[in-house]
Length: 272
Image 1 (spheres, rainbow, N blue to C red):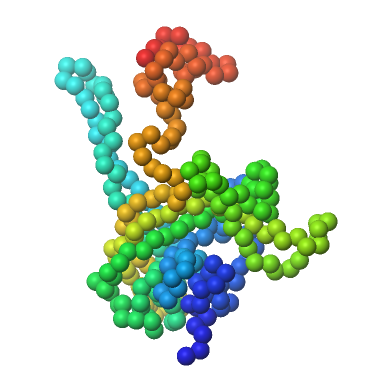
Image 2: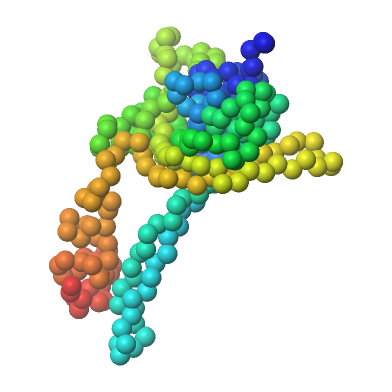
């Protein structure tokens, strides 16, 4: 069989056909979907995850309940809000059905022309999803790494950021005829051990394009670099002299409530 160009992983992409050609994205300080890359395993390639093509939607979601603690005889007052266990994160993805690479094949399963997977009941193993929130040149310029990208150190606050490179299209001259700077920074989020919970496709007489949609449950979400634990620095920690809430402060909060520029009022009256 000839090479399947819709499932021919190289250069970080799952295919090499015209469907996987890069276009130009606008440079803004606001994050735009054109620069978000979603990588998953592709069946038959075991070295790395690759960027999915023709993905029209990716929507992760996390939620948890927070219980109200109240006491009889203390009026209509919330004593404390107590977070419950976080529900398993979920995600939804929608992708155009390709003859030579369907949603199963694009997430590492032996489906379509590559195998027997036709149903969720055939999935014996989970898969990972990597999301790259790619910076614009404007944002990279503010970090001092324009057209290069910034790679963080493992275990550091910027450990979840890495530099990614793009292939050369046309050369440019900026005083260095051999300029090879073609990179951006990317914030990495790993959705670990995902299981499909639903799959659907609509074959309609009045619509030409067939879309596949899949819902997944996610075991864990992390930045691929940080060691998570009880004392991970997450911000708003009053024991580290960080600002958070008046109620949880460990010292008089003269700089907390109304203590900013032009502030005043209750700050001198509130202590913890």
